[in-house]
Amino acid sequence: MSTTEQNLSLREGKPVPPRRLWFGTVSAAIAWVLLGCADLVITWRACMVQEDYGIPPSHPGARILYFALAVALLAVTVWAGFTSYRTWRYLSAHRALLDAEGVERREFLAIGGVIVAITMGMGILWLALPPLFLDLCWRAR
Image 1 (cartoon, rainbow, N blue to C red):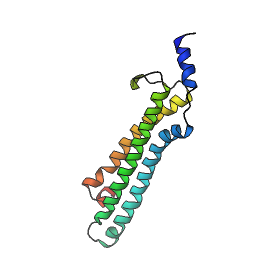
Image 2: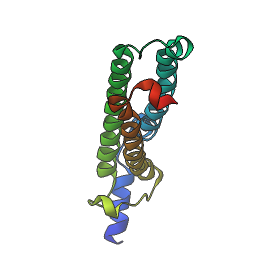
Image 3: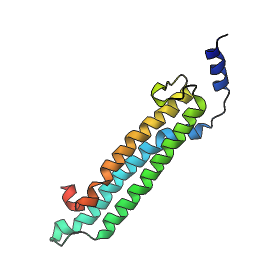
Image 4: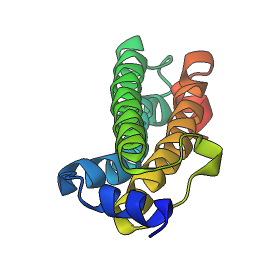
């Protein structure tokens, strides 16, 4: 029996709650979708009066609400990424992230959660930055 087979049998016996695996994998994507939907609703609501009646720019409360929601959803994404990373470190025999392999389903979900969290975190940043510099209605046009 080689050491690889022994390590594999040790990893298979480690209990990891399925909710932890799915939280790390799915919650970052859900946060990104929620921010996109909130972007549509907040922008539509803030710009509706300006477009119809030519009234000056929207109230700064819309921008503050949007940025606060973006920061909260980015925090959820970072939390999901750290949860996935810790789960992957717990399950994997590899210690370097660049050497990661999804040998079994649980490892695959954990490393997939890290990748999804990084990708969706960048998407949330790119979606949240323009309202800091541009008017909401200018960006929507």
